[in-house]
Picture 1 (tube, rainbow, N blue to C red):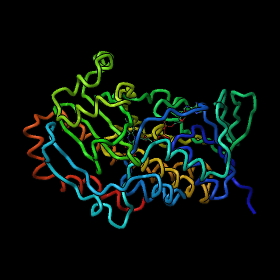
Picture 2 (spheres, rainbow, N blue to C red; picture 1 turned 90 degrees about the vertical axis):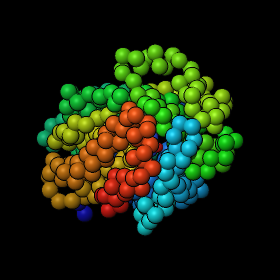
Picture 3 (cartoon, rainbow, N blue to C red; picture 1 turned 30 degrees about the vertical axis):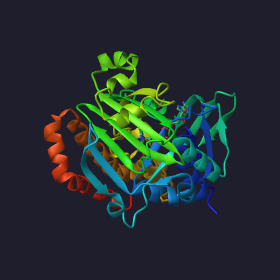
Picture 4 (cartoon, helix red, strand yellow; picture 1 turned 135 degrees about the vertical axis):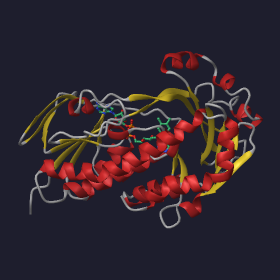
Length: 370
Ligand SMILES: Cc1cc2nc3c(=O)[nH]c(=O)nc-3n(C[C@H](O)[C@H](O)[C@H](O)COP(=O)(O)OP(=O)(O)OC[C@H]3O[C@@H](n4cnc5c(N)ncnc54)[C@H](O)[C@@H]3O)c2cc1C
């Protein structure tokens, strides 16, 4: 029996947990560290069919059914709540996976429960040196280890990315956003968006009487701080009454604010370090492909590391297999984001006329296996 590769995963977000689980099940020897001891609650996720398919393969399909809410339609409206289009996503993702809305912490918990190796919480990498024969790692708790491969799943502000390419900083994507979860008194039963000029409000059911709300605003980076200072409700004061009502709910005042950033550098690896998830290819959430791409990364990485060849070749094979798909998502996302600042009269007419075709064009390619 060949000795299994030893792998360190840095970061226990969705990407890291998924990768650790997939590699463990492929017989690799896995350690996973996470610098936080507690994760903030309060965000929700919309998971399209390809995310559900990948997460099911990773072993958390039943949690998606029990904890998530099936989403059948994506309802696009103008800022006054007038319908522009209704996308039948059961049809769009037929044979791939049933899209769901789910609380971020429920998905994370399901991935942790599914994992057979413990997450070393409150631990980070203190020092790391890579040689031809392995990677020596010193941890913040004073322990150390030697690994064949280190996986950087440490998110958009990845420290491991600095080792891979110190110039690959995340870039501001042109929007700031707020997120919160509240009760669903509004009886919103599907993915529902209100589109204004340079402003979006989205509501997605994510559990019994739980509604995830996401609001964003196009703005320059210089003005982002001032936007954060203004109460969220003021930014949306000319929107439909349902939005204004949601913004008076508990949770809205404490909404989590952040700029949206993207990572487009394709370097992704050294000889023995590989970046996955947001660390490698974060993008704006317009296509809601973050979890899908992370879970697919995990499956493809585990499979790649079980192939034949030198580690560097295996990592390069992984990179070449994942780049076209993640680039496609980033390019389509960028294009969709660019319509935010279009005159609403033009954008609304385009959506009334062509939204189902736009969805088909943007997502059809993702129905194929990664
Ligand atoms: C506003 C917004 C809305 C989104 N909505 C959706 C959506 O609806 N659907 C969807 O699919 N995706 C969505 N996404 C994207 C999605 O959340 C991510 O792509 C996905 O969760 C994968 O993230 P990750 O695990 O790569 O990174 P993260 O979630 O950032 O996890 C990284 C982990 O690494 C840890 N870490 C960081 N540095 C270190 C270190 N040095 N040592 C140890 N640990 C470290 C962090 O504490 C964290 O736990 C959204 C993103 C944003 C910003």
